[in-house]
Image 1 (spheres, rainbow, N blue to C red):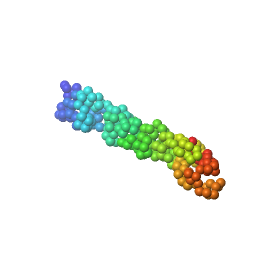
Image 2 (cartoon, one colour):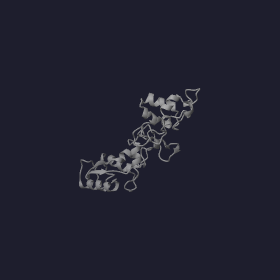
Image 3 (tube, rainbow, N blue to C red):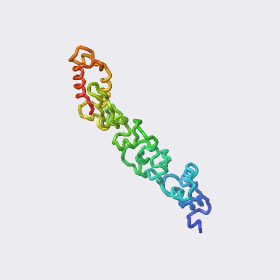
Image 4 (cartoon, helix red, strand yellow):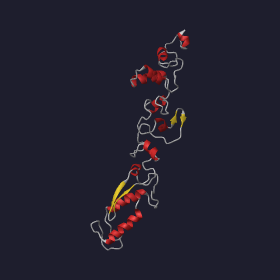
Length: 239
């Protein structure tokens, strides 16, 4: 009667051949006639071994729940796919980057979803210093170090910076990681930022400064040089 009730084969201890004996399938409420009780692309036997041997889970109630749930961590990635991709079926965000594993690989169950695909095992896929999750929040490209191609990395454009301008003083600037030319002056942000730091620390020659016949350095301060720096400042600032 019990064999009939549980639809098991009286001539086999493992009716569906999934590696989990019928007695354990009954104990954990699995289907003795279906090797994939929860349809998660991994046999009941393999899942049981992984949960008990690899993860050390022994709680009967927890095992019942897990063996009958196809997406244990509810990250959109079916448990069998988690093992295939090398992600953690008990952690919705394996690499702790702020993006669920399912979104990183572009799957929700058996459905391919639209969106940027990133590495679920690498919190910073493009290696620019900004996590994939933060890039999605910032609307920058987690697959490009410099989203807008302006010569500044996404990390550089996330924060405010200061620059000391001779005869002008300290200025704070912040550029937009999604706009190559934040102030729309026709000069890429990277050229402006790097140009200022380069120009501030170099010698200004008489050819670059037509109002004086001498070479000017930051220690040689006069009215003409002050005028030149202000003229240069008004034409190349990024803020």
